[in-house]
Image (cartoon, rainbow, N blue to C red; front, side, top):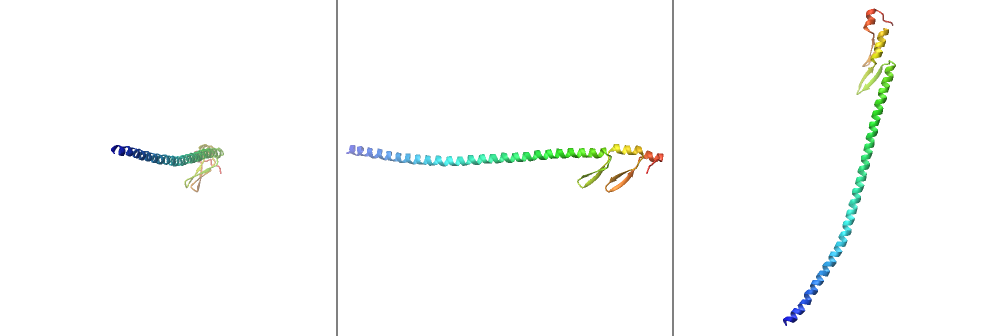
Length: 147
């Protein structure tokens, strides 16, 4: 009898193990397929998001850099034009107002002051809305002011 029970128990044990193994294989294979698809979709979405983020970041950085270059070029051009204007006005010996931060000054080249001093002609200088007629001291000492 023991041998019959043993013989009959063995096929039952093996069949149970085989059934459990098949069930596990089916669960694992279904789980792996779904998981792989899910992970592939998640990684795909993350890749697209990262790619778009990098593109937008580089684009914005390029725009900022371009604006800075335009600003610097404009500042250089403006300073060059200002210097040329002051040189032109100075060569004509005309007083030129310079305005900066609520302060106004009048520029007159030193060469023009010397030139007018040698001719003994009075010349007006304007500072802070006040005009003063200047004449060289040597002209006053000689008594030769021309009016």
